[in-house]
Figure 1 (tube, rainbow, N blue to C red):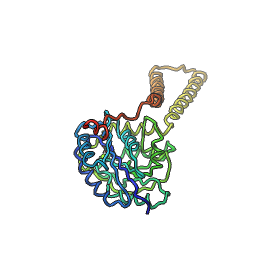
Figure 2 (cartoon, rainbow, N blue to C red):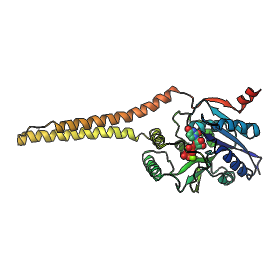
Figure 3 (cartoon, protein in one colour):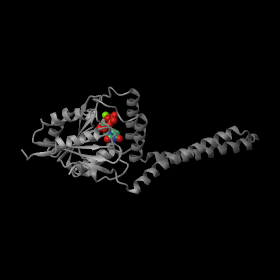
Length: 322
Ligand code: UDP
Ligand code: MG
């Protein structure tokens, strides 16, 4: 067998004080079963407002060889957390996990085995939820519609039910890190970089403790971000709408001319006119809105701001103590 390899476990955490100790124990137990593999944890504290950072400091002090952490200067979002975690991971294999135990740690050994035994055939073992039990039905419904829509209008395949919980090879992670765009939509990035992904199915689990930090509105905005980042179809919709309304106005003009000439019936009434003005005005605003969405993304992208800002990690903490 080959020499001992290293598995990095990347965990973005936002207000996870309740679940973090349970998570760490559960994952550590699973890691003892891993063969020929050492483990390092990289926790990313995404500007938590509770005692998450405090817990991470303690963990890093208690397990100096296995636990590392990065703490942001504020909440930058899960996508930034993922990026920071991947950037700091040193492992030959890297797995991304949520802190709430919705990603079953029991799968870790199977994922690692698949990667190790595939001889480079498989670069990533992803996980897919086959059920969405425990999730509000309305949320599941909209999630389904979103996946249908985005796969319809985007060339990048975005797998329904695929979680961010995935184990990747170093090569694939380097490819992901080479994408430095500011508006990150990980589900798209994972798929865009290519490589072979093998999916494991599992049943949805509810959070072990704590609460989800995603509101319905945030998820809605996230899905719009995904569409804008991976498809230019909305822009085409804008031009098609413009073209169709122009076409409709030509036909309308013809009808009016014919009506006047043949039936000697001059157009009358302002209500129809008001309706037309409103409809066209509405369409124009709608198309402008779509344009604006893309322009806004470009605006943020051209500023080239860093994806995250670190306030503290296990080294700087060490210096502070010294
Ligand atoms: N998370 C984060 N930053 C955020 C929101 C969430 O790092 O701004 C982390 C969170 O701590 C958890 C993971 O992302 O580890 C998934 O979050 P959550 O469980 O709230 O999402 P859900 O599972 O409901 O999609
Ligand atoms: Mg969760």
